[in-house]
Image (tube, rainbow, N blue to C red; front, side, top):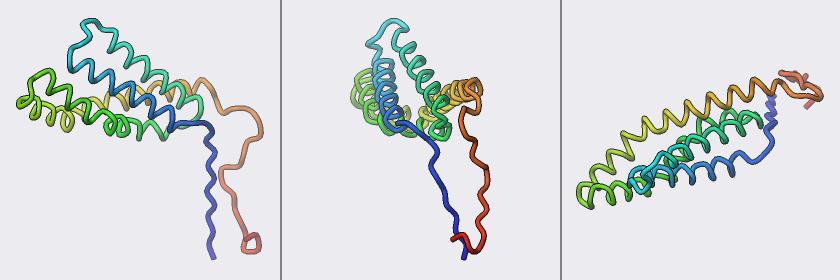
Amino acid sequence: MFVVEVRNRARGRAGTMTSLWAVVMAVVLFLGETHWSSHGGVEVTGVVATALLGAYLGWSRHLGVVLVAPLVSWLVAWLPLWVAAMIHDGFVRGLFVGLFLVTLGWIGIGASELVGLGLVALVVRALRGRGRGRREPDVVVLGPNDV
């Protein structure tokens, strides 16, 4: 008999923070696409929100969430970004521009989110170090009589 026990060592609320960040990014992308914001404050808000989420994920050792966060952001921003394209370009043209924006354009948006989150999370994780307290072994070997 072979038994593998996997424990979750992560602490905190990475899902809540990621969802909140995704909503903020949806608003930022919506306002940016509709051009309702004439100055760069909206873009700065998006960069700051991404840096804060990256710092949180690095500090709480949730680096795996960095890979999922752009997908969550896409799921939240998909419809608002399409509507924003229809507002900016008109209904008929906005349908096609929005479809292009939420499919192919999202590759660039998601990649930039992934890079931004990843860099900040890795830097914060490296600065934080291994942490204090008792270090657990990397591998636990169970014998046949330990089960």
